[in-house]
Each structure stands twice: as C-alpha cells, then as structure tokens.
Length: 357
Figure: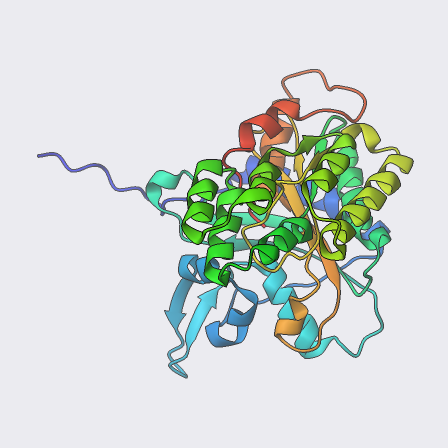
C-alpha cells in the first residue's frame, strides 16, 4: 500500500513568498494609514499567554480550539493567541484603565485556532483591525464601520455590502423564554448558522411555544432594508429590553445613511455572533468575488470587565487573506462604481458563517 505524501507544512497555514509577502505588506500599510488618520495607535500583544489569565475573555468553544503548550519554567499552561480582542481587553484592564478615554488601538496579528482537516478553514488567520475603548453611544458604534469603509475605498474597493444586526435583540428574546443558559447558548449557535430546524428542535425540547418560539425562529430570516425594523418590532412584546436594541439600530442606520453609506447597508437581525462577548451592534462586510465576509466586528461592553472594571468598547477586524483574494480578483476585472455590492456573497455566506473575529 502506498502512503499519501506528507505535507511539508501543517494543514491550515500558508507560506508567503516574496511577491505575496510584498502585497500583504502593501495592504497593511494602506489600512494602517487610514487607522492612523483616525487617531488609532498600534499595539502588539504577545503570541502566547497564560491560559488561566486569558480564559475569562474566551468562550468554551474557543478554548477548546486553542493550541496549548506547557511553560517549562512554571508548569503553567500557555495558550497560543486564539483571539486578539480578548487579549486587548486584558491589556486594557490590567495596564491602561488609568489612561484617558477614549482609547483608539489597532493591530495586525495572526490568530491560531484548531480546525478539523475536513472543515476547510484556516488554522492560522491573519487579522488587521482596531478597538475603540470607552465611548458607548451610537457614534462609537458607527465609527469602526466608517473607518472600515474608508479602508476599502483606499484599496480600490468601491462596491461592498455592510450587513448590520443587533445581538442584544436576539439575547433579549432568549432571556424572555426562561430556558437554561446552556439551551440559550445552543440556540445562539444554531441561529448563527441559520439552522432553523435545529432551533425548532431545541425550542420544542425546552417547551417553548407560541409567540416566543415564533419570534426566535423568525430572526434568522429577518434581513433586508429599513422595513425589517418594523417587522422585528411586530414580532416582539413592547418591552424595553426588546425595543431598545431596535431603536439603537434605527439610529445607527440613520447615521450611516447620512454619511453616504445607505446604499451599502443591509439589515440582518440574524447577524448573530457565536462569540459570547458581543453585546450590541454587530456587522459583517461582504464583497462579490470573495465567498465569505472580508471583515466584521461589533460592540462588546462587558468583555474588559471580565478582567477588571467594565469599559464599553467596540471594534472590527479585516481578514487579510480575504483582502488579498479580493485584490487578486479585482485585478482581473473592471472595478464597479458606487457603494452597493456584495449581495451574492451575502447570500452564499448566510448559511455557513460564524465570523472569524
């Protein structure tokens, strides 16, 4: 029997030869130049940290996917960076809380997550992004999206779609069911995958019926224009915890429309993150020609509080590999004009996304 040839490098990682490395650096420089113009300063978190220190900022699934080693000096378990936002939250809580807010921080790093070989996902992900620490209003929700849009324009990308949603809306519906936290987590994961049959099964097992079940099952299919806000309002009880996220989303929509991005917007109430630290607005950015989101982020007001005192925060990251794919695809076709685009990518990704940030 002939054994399959062994790969010279591990599954899910990449080698950048001179041409590709040069293109990657050029993209980073364009993005960082925009970040700097908006007052963001670079930070470089460590490649590995003590697991017990970083664990409060990581959900169970991410800890399971993390690469771990033992520190020979102390015997403590080290985790190789699985998520940069959790690291920056730890850095802020343990060393920057006495600095004047807001803090505007940016980075370009790689994160490492174990993925099964059949999953078709990278194990090393190159991310470039920013975090806005301190402000809690809708102006702060909008700022990272506006900066991301400016980065794309500087890279020559003029047609894109920004899908925005509200994690707090779905979480409010979940809490009103009264089901156990473990069931809420499973429902959140199923909703993030757009797996409505799985949601139906979970709700049935938990004994959730009637209007509560109907509202939750409708969320993954609530996407479109501004009319989606009214549809969402009709599905939910007139309570503050359900209506407040919709009002905030309406204000974000108005701000972005006034800034000239209305044509790029898509409301997606099913834009739900599997990472549990997101608390409010979430968004993903799509461009036709790339079969997945090229970036995304959102608000995480309680993450820094897991390491110290709470500080409202929001941010986003681009997937550098996907930006490079986009640049390569653009080089072989005439660029579009305007800001609307990416609808095909949104449709293709809706059933499978979970977000890389």
